[in-house]
Length: 130
Image (tube, rainbow, N blue to C red; front, side, top):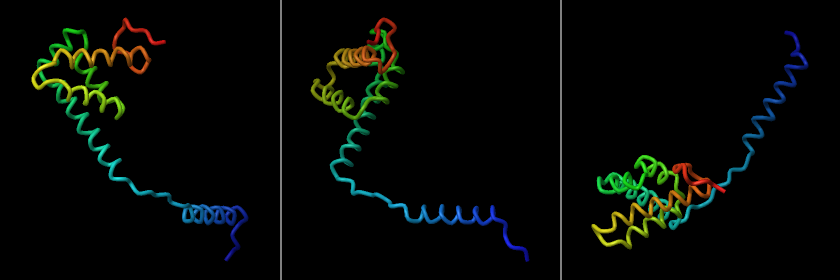
C-alpha cells in the first residue's frame, strides 16, 4: 500500500479539527419566563382579534370610505410590533361594545398616516416621509 499524500493528510487533519470544533462549541440556553410566554401569546391573540375586526363589513366599508384598502390595513397590522398591537388593542377595549366603528377606522388610518410619515410604510401617496 502506498502512503497517503501530503494534501490528503492536511484534508484529514482539517476535517478532524472541524469535527472537534463543532463538538466543543458551547450551547447557550436560558429559561423562558412565564411572563414572556404569556405576553407573546397575548400579542398573537390581540393580532388575530384585530385582523378579525378588519373582516367586519362595517369596518371594511368605513376604511374604504376613508381611502384605505382593507388589505393594506391587514398587512400593516401583520407587520406591527407587539407594543403597537397592545396599544391598539387597549384602545379597542376602551370603546363601548357595538359603538365606535368610526373611531376604530379613524384610529387605524391615523396609525397608518403616522407610520407613513416615519417612512415605515408607504400606503398614502400624499404623505411624505422625512
